Length: 258
Image (tube, rainbow, N blue to C red; front, side, top):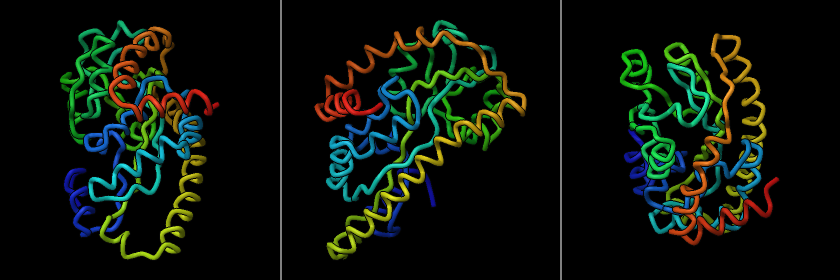
């Protein structure tokens, strides 16, 4: 149906009723959604899934209404890792390396903090860019590696686990206001059940995806995760200090997520 921008506009206009887009894209409109990408806020998908019902998480969804859409809930791909042409064992190994990163400010800040050169590329261009050495590494989740087989171009997998990667289900504001209160409640209830199922499914997929990749030749490298975690503090401070809702979200996660 088009790229993220086009699909968002189609939902705004009511041309399509629902869409699921990366929270990192929607953060270009609702800045508070960047809170989900604070590095090392979550240890795994299970922890990230525990945060969907936090007050701050729900405020993020409510704030989308000012952009003509209604946020319904979240869904998750896997945690983010680094897939590379050459082994990555510490943060320093990424110095001056070109890494494909999602086109979003916090991703750029994170990889710059690690000394890398973040590069925005469409998914279709990643494999040939790895093959021709235009890219050295990819910031990626295991779902995408398994689905698009990037490990055939870059075999080394560093399980950095540095960020969650949620998406948001949202609907047309125009359509939403045609519903009765009872129907709105039904939609939210139905999606909440699907949301929880999706989280549980993704937790299991993290295990099966890693097993598939190892069996298919991916080389999981031993890394010094602390060398990456040391870079997280300034990035987290930058975003929690600039947005009150991001700061509230980080605080609620720290207090309630286990």
